Image (cartoon, rainbow, N blue to C red; front, side):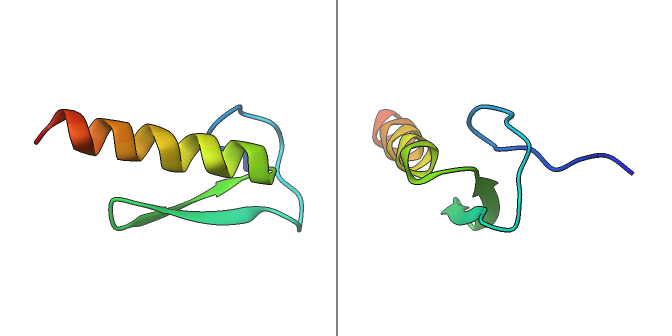
Length: 50
């Protein structure tokens, strides 16, 4: 079975993973810093397409 990793930095996830909703899909981040990076990247990508 493959190990789950952070959507931002590929760090192995543990039971403290932070769910982040990105465009209708939930991904997991290893820490609040990575969660913020994912949210900011999604916001920037969404703004670029408008």
